Length: 363
Length: 218
Image 1 (cartoon, rainbow over the protein chains, first blue to last red):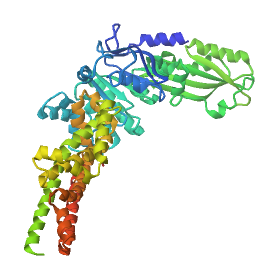
Image 2: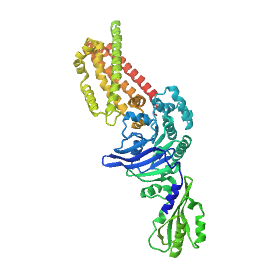
Image 3: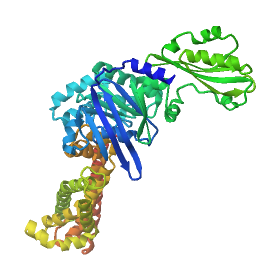
Image 4: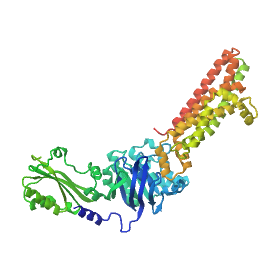
């Protein structure tokens, strides 16, 4: 079944052509801090115009990775190509013009408290050496883009967290970067503000065709705006692919665990009663995605395999316009033949089926 | 108080203000860059150089550990070299400045060190060089602390300038000792204390006002 899904994933073009136009290419990046390897051989590409999300637990190496892209951190070995140019051995002075091609937003916004909102936004242009008159017009335009025109003369301290991040985004865009790095940009924001900031980033990605690389520990962020996702654990990329296909068929334990918060899980009161002893009811986990999830799967099942089954938990979710479903069914286990036919039917429909166990009494 | 004593009082006030202002200004001009150098050359700083950092720190600590009255006398040859004389108000400005500069450098260092490292990283990520970081981030963000520290330095200088009477620099401290104490002119003593209180309160008030206007953090 896995092969079916990954074949389907390959068939769906997501912002890429046969010859990928890579904005970022990382080759075997390694970085150690004392005894711990923050990056342990990371290879990755970010294609032009896409939003790539990198997710991992804290300490997985995300921050080190994103900092290698603009030279704030230096890898011990490996290569970092930005728009085709290898930057990991460049000196601080050579990095400075390159960093102007890369915008960055931060978890704690990092706005200068002593400058007004418009001066914060205009700072990258000041660094470029543009006179004040040539800075304020683009700054005003960017503030309009992020919906904060009326706050131009305000100081950051008077803004809410969401407004501060909007200023941060406007500032990151000021020098017309080719790439936007987002370092946990929504982690300090409440859920509603997070949604609006993510919507803004998605908008900017579409309107300006800006390539975005974001790191996060929240799968919800990936699900909302990323085109592709890479999962990092202990300094290694353990899994990578289009978001919907990773959601539909996570290969690694860490991915499954990160998905745990937003994908259906068997309720604890049922999972605690699961046994290997057959009889009672068998609890099935069914993962289904793409075309297979669009059809009338359950009613077809009822028609094709007469007999009882019950939907215990789960549902169909939509990720990148692709249906991704996880269903938990309870099937009477007394008749092994019936159970086998249910499984066979579902597998024929390109669903992944797993018998989680049995419960003695019906749940 | 006799007209002569009153004239003396006015002259002493002027001498104290001159010594405080001139040495204050010099300590600002040299102390702030020194403070910046201390922060920049420290571990993780924008121009990390631990040798320079330790050397600077040692020199600053050396000057700061000498009591001012001893510094005043020990620096007489230096003063003579710079001012041409070792006596008088201008001569006192040299040791006052040399004492106040490392003092203010340490105060400025504390304020500069408190600037959020994330802001420096943001400036670097924008492609800013060291000068940009100093001009756009470190100094503006630390400015309230830099000004508050300067206020403290000025008040300290008023106190220190009282000792400068020892090298014939005049000033309010000198007047209080020679007339108020040694000649039992209680009215002079009271007048000096009142003037000093007014001066200190005035400087502190002006400094606090300025800090409040500059501070955009809250």
